[in-house]
Amino acid sequence: MESIDGMLGTVLYGLTLWQVSLSFIIILFTIFLRGPILKRALKTMENIAAKYEGEWDEEFTHSIGQPLNVLILVYGLLLSLNVLPLPSDPINISGFIDAAELVTVLFLGLWLFSRMITALDKVIRKRAMDPEHWLDAGLAPFITISLRIIVFVTGVIVIAQNLGYSVSGLVASLGLGAAALALASKDTLSNLFGSLMIMMDKPFQVGDWIKGSGFEGTVEEIGLRSTRVRTFEKTMMNVPNSVIVNIIVENLDRRKDRDLNMRRVYITLGIAMDADADSMEEAVRQIKQLLMDEPLVDKRYEPMVYFTGFGESTFDVMVYYFADSDWRNWLFAKQTVNLKIMRKLEELGLSLAYPTRTVHLEGADMTKTRLEGEGKASHIPPAVPDRIEPE
Image (cartoon, rainbow, N blue to C red; front, side, top):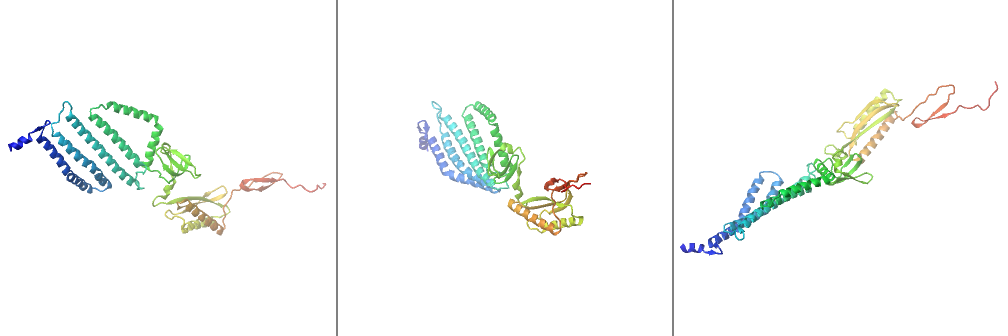
């Protein structure tokens, strides 16, 4: 026993054999036990994640595996070095090991956060594919890139501060630089925040037909600076996002929303004033029945037909109904209904009025007046006799 104690107390380069052996044992234990420890830790996290529904738990568990594996190995190696009486003079090896341990742990933390952001990016992209979710597919890269920048800058500052460097000047410089950049790129930042509002609020999406002050067309792209709109003349308009978020934008394709998918038709029929009350009442009734029987008219909103007023030269009848939201189908339904209304009025002996005006002239010289369309009149001079008979 004394011989073993004496052997373990043998000093070699300032280190006893016992200290070297203990350090070597720690390294072996780290290498052989790393796998079971990692497996057990991941299994525990999977059991905890199984209690909650959602893909985030699975992605998080997967992302933490490799950093945890490296952390166990690095921690074992650093622990094996800490059991040795490392010299601090003339070279401060002990201080170097302590600094290396701190930096390694911080770098592993940055790596872990980076992998978690990657997992978050997968979840965000999957959620953004759902049209009912508030997230937009174009917003996912912006979120992940912003998070990576924040994590990287924060990590560098923390590492520098823990290594003994003063970061107050660096932070102040970054603040002044950010303020100068914000002032210099005010319009760019307003467009950027405008694009974020569009992506989050989703007033429209790519492919929607929108209409605003000075533009109308189909959205082709929602960028970080502007939204590209293809007009119906096939020209391209780049509308700054800062403008779009501050004006009223009408999304005409929202007629196609689920359980809606309809478009309004509102017309006013001008019946000639030679119609009597009974014929007007019958016309209103039959036009209403015509709309109720027409398959192209959407019956979820009951069609309305009413004798609404007296015009200057017409009896006004309001016709109000809904048809399919697709523009071509809507036009076809409108045409079909208009033709059927015309035929129905012909059957009832009614006609649509057109603008006319009668001019009455008084005086000794009774000039004949011929009426023309749109209220115009041409004057015909009185007839001149072929010869004048003496009195």
